[in-house]
Image (cartoon, rainbow, N blue to C red; front, side, top):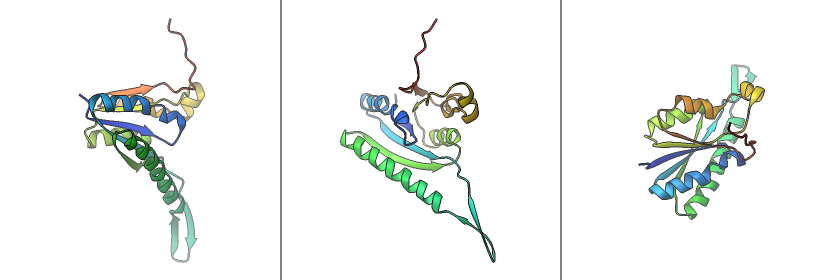
Length: 154
């Protein structure tokens, strides 16, 4: 049923809360995991020169390198557990990149952790999980962040 599972990671412990669930699914269905790290658009630093301006890509290159190193560490750990896994770094709007990647690569399920924002923080920062849930044409498994307070259902 699930042969290609996409797990979204951003380098945080909260996002990694989705990994145990994705690993369990991958083992149960002998599925391939893809770990996706999306770099949000950065502020471009422009340096004036005699012939115009030049964009300093050093910061962007460092972020890409950090993302790749982070994913290499996670994929090594999961490979050691017998999981077939790869890591991908993309840049752009996180929700759009997640949904686009899922379509482009025929992903069967997206697994991601919520980050526990509510109220004004959610309004200001937005909710990637909410946007993916509403936009993806693929099943989405949302894992409640460990730090989120549990409210009782009435």
